[in-house]
Length: 157
Image 1 (tube, rainbow, N blue to C red):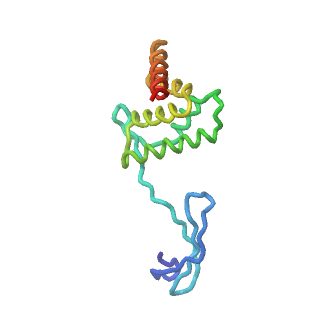
Image 2 (tube, rainbow, N blue to C red):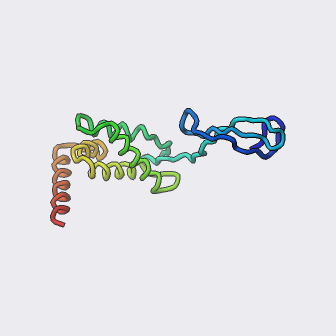
Image 3 (cartoon, rainbow, N blue to C red):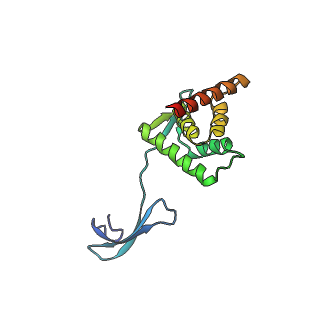
């Protein structure tokens, strides 16, 4: 780190701690040439994570969109908001781990459905009805039958 006073290229770290924003590290440094002290802030240089929409357009990944969809799916269910936050974290991490740099919106939807199927089948059906654009009651009946079959197969196996 270059000293802001004498421009010497080397300094030593005296103290490190999380900055108030919690997304950076605050470091107190001392120049090895002039002995003056200064503060630096270190942050991770994140590569933007993109979502490829169905029409081919790309947009930045927005965690808030996942959280919003989950809140709607779990509306009037007995799941605390902290659990929705943890579920959002899991979904975000799985999405970011799958492909470096970008993922399709369909893949994100599938990840969400997988997580919901493991956590709450009513929320799963609610989310699926919007995500898969259910048109009529037969769509609901079909998904409930498939869930019953999966549940029956897992009990027998």
